[in-house]
Image (cartoon, rainbow, N blue to C red; front, side, top):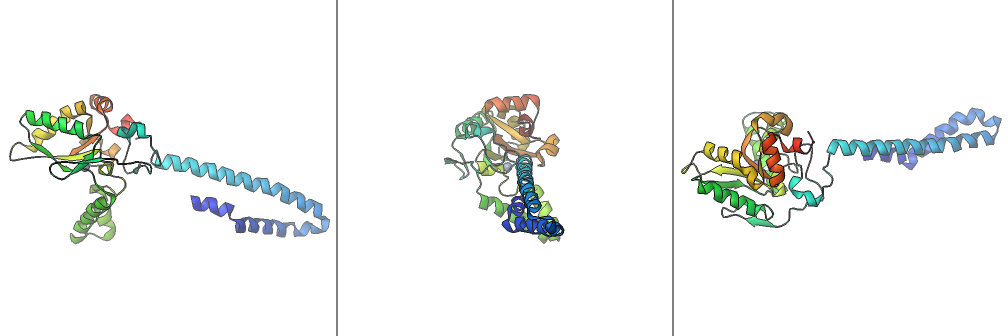
Length: 256
Ligand SMILES: [Zn+2]
């Protein structure tokens, strides 16, 4: 897009246009200079108008193709939307991280709510832990590369392996884990079943501001296969509405 704008504002390009205009007007040269000057004067505003229209068009397209990805409002940090269509906003700051007892990290902003949720789940006899919290860009890339290698080793072509890997692992820059606001929760199956943990989370996580981010019946909207373990903090108010209406974050933000 930028290239197109540059092409039209490139001095050489403008030169070309004027030259061809000059060539065309050669036939008229005999008719006098004043007419040629008038043509040039008329041509310049047309080019400026064209550049302006293209600029506005490109800006509109960029806004609508990337949605809200370029910037976000830090006051609504809990509602930042990150998915395939919405990469992590450039001005997003992860901020302070808290290291959990198993070494995983989460944003300090969600830690108290996460701890309270785990305490209350444990009080009902469940045992659960964060299997994956905050991830760096490099770590997300490593996960994607490992998945790609798995498919490649299984005999898939490079293109197929890439497609399959990206269906499982978010492309770096589009994973909620990079926000520090998402956690993959696993059950300690020596104590309780996975289903018991995921059922409890499904029914209660909203009270602590967390949502089951990728339900099985919403894959067409989220673009992610069912992940019963992936929970995302959005705050109690949004989580309650999302839970009660049975909608996704995309639907809540009207960004489907
Ligand atoms: Zn996850």
